[in-house]
Figure 1 (tube, helix red, strand yellow):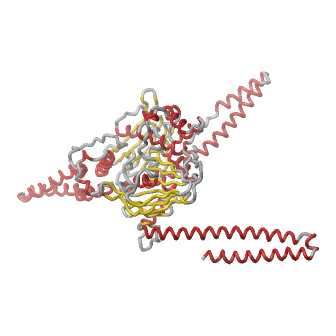
Figure 2 (spheres, one colour):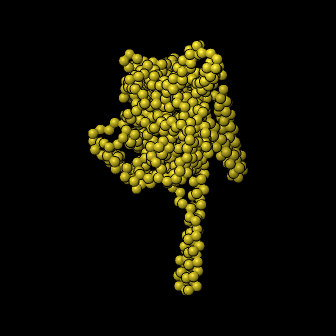
Figure 3 (cartoon, helix red, strand yellow):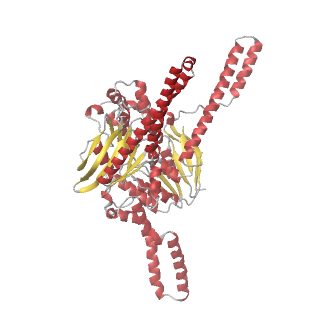
Length: 637
């Protein structure tokens, strides 16, 4: 056992924030803390790092345990580091190895000195030298440089950035550098609070592999469900100030929690029924007003008091629903991008980008950081002009655009959240506004916060709620799950899956992409590669050797794009013709059945002329059906 919490309690002033937290972390175990925002996950980390002291219960740690801690940081956070900010990024991480480098220096000095020693003194020095060499090897002395370079590359730093002064790094880059230092240190337990923030998809995938193979234990807090599924074998939920341990990954936790909640709800309802039955019986018995009745009523009351009450299950945030309804339906062809190219200051971001979006598509746009995904979205919604190519919208397309900048004008900043929504959509009632805002984590008096006082994350959530209510039939969303907790993400996922319109979005959340996307488009410098499926399908196709890989719809050139467009159009025509023939056959078969019913009619069957006319009509219809079937079979080839 590396770490144990037993019945841990913590209060801030009069407010109890943790009531009964109990769990164990074994050596090399990978575990996650989950719960809604504000449940107390970061508070547990503060207790484990010693920043806070527990008010009750016990925290037991292995005596030799070395803890590495990555706090949750954002772009506006000033990242403090234990190194001189004027040194390079490479040197800042390399400083982790100072003890090993000192050890290596001692080894070299011993080698130099041993040339002048002999006899017993030489033997003693050789013994110390062997011990030091073994220690240097065991602590990774021979792998310092390869580990350092591997971490820098894995976290998305190209070699051109390694010599950059630490002071000149952005907040997100400093956070990644701090994570890199932590991974290079020899820790028995890593406490990671949102470690995937500021990482692109490739870097997150690298971090997954690194942590899975990490020799120590990991306890993490994350909103990245895919990341947790890949790493953790234990999920610890904090709910109502208490902890519940699930021995599995995030998906296992979700399944088990739903099962447990259903059992609890059933037990609670059955017990409430039993209690009401007892209370009704007591009331009836007491109404008789005799001494015997009073005695019996008191006896029943004692039995009722002895029942151990099942707690009412708390509301499941994931049970909330958000419904998106377009105010008008678009045509089947929603958007065409033809030969798009874009760049800034003489540097090309991407070129020859060609694709089309059709009604009902839910497209996830992915690609390396800095490749221009947000720029491409701005081109699609006509807020930015491309250097080359064009974008065409289809018929009746109404765009709803979610921008990460979350801009609000001066008038909006004077309003509360509730007023902003009510003024923008006066048709909505108070209950509908509150329900929508609750889905984006604004509950109770939160809805009366002034817009001017909101954080960047809160502004984003208000903007997202406005987009969801706009009645658009084509949603273009730039990182819609940023600043959402897990339950809000799941509400949004359900809403997008049920949405009858079209969606194109950027996201680094692979679990979200898996649950919503019908197509993944990967943006590169040379165009777009399309994968008809979710994120797992994309990974499968990318990892399959090219020799075995089926042809992917890849629009790397305009000619290829136009050929594909023509081929798709032809396929749609054939599909439409087949559907029309099938409809005609069904109509004719119905008429044949009517003829057969008429031939069974006594009046017609007794009249040879009438019977012959109906039979002739039936024969003609059957011939038409045969001809249509011939055409149907030809179109199937």
